[in-house]
Length: 474
Image 1: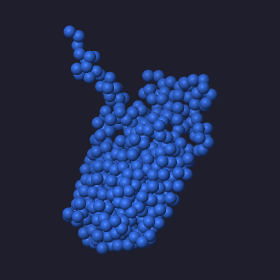
Image 2: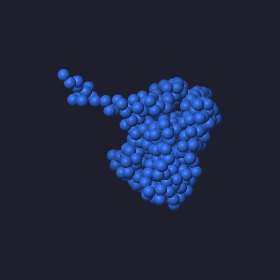
Image 3: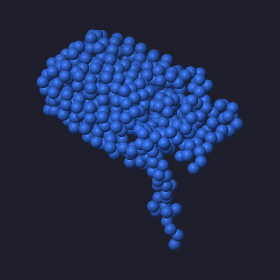
Image 4: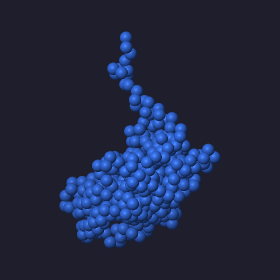
């Protein structure tokens, strides 16, 4: 097949771009600079979502430190507190696909999603101070979860749109803010968040976080669909990818087709990715929800318990760009296997730290577990873009990211029940086994081929059995 370079219309030429088609039939919009499109360099669309991610991070990563005070105020036990966090995760993860779908269809652009998310974040923090349990839980779980999920979805997919030629490190950088952004607040909650000041504390935080998100929302902007940076020739880039694939030197070849969500869901690989993320996230969310409470139950209170949670969150965030960088050189799948095996070993370290009541070992193992927890998010995000295209990644990764819902239910609620039933030591060993199984599951992943794309469309076009088209003439 001959590769084509053509201006789509005279207007397109005047606008300074061409529609360039590679030998696979994939089209790229090539020629415009970010400055021509938005008035800003594309670095801005890395920095702004990174800040927004840090703003929403305290919902998930500082909640464990705030649990003691909230438990005293509302008389909630460990399982109830963990359930609140996990049901927040259900709404946060559940918002991802709808937000991505609305974004790709031009109904809810990223800037409006972040604006609405900021307002909902403000209301969530304020609602937790109301003397009405229903309002408090609805505001924190539903409004807070949906608002944070809209912000998260808007942030995580923007880097692959502005940096389609090198998305791993940048996706990891943005993603990292969602974890280490909470580190200062982990210590602040531990030191200053008490039953006598919890209302004013939460109101101030809500106003600060919500206002900042509203301001940041004005700087969110997606490039045109299939946009490609002018300094990188997409045809030459694709040719180099194919040449390196033939030499077995290219670790992360980009998608050969732009797969819509409906098309992607007709491939078994989409479901294997989802199941794998459920498994590894159940281990990671167990750590997010229970690292600090378990430390407190073992007799380590105050600064010591907060340190375990803070190191978990800090390395969780730092690990995300590291994962992106590693995956560019080792390959996404190879990096996943390495990370998931390391996660299993970290769970073993937590087991011995809890068993021997060894605080340094427990903190170090918690940090390594946090590192691996953070690494999985950019790995799944970039792998999904590599398999199904960055152009539709807001929808497709939204589907994969929904694995956080069952992963959270298993890791958080079931995990807290396991801790209650068999103790912290046994629960860490269960986590080690699950992480090891997740590493094995990585071997099932593969990039959908052109032939698979053709088969998907052939099946979709085939008449249904028993239909008028499917019946033979007598």
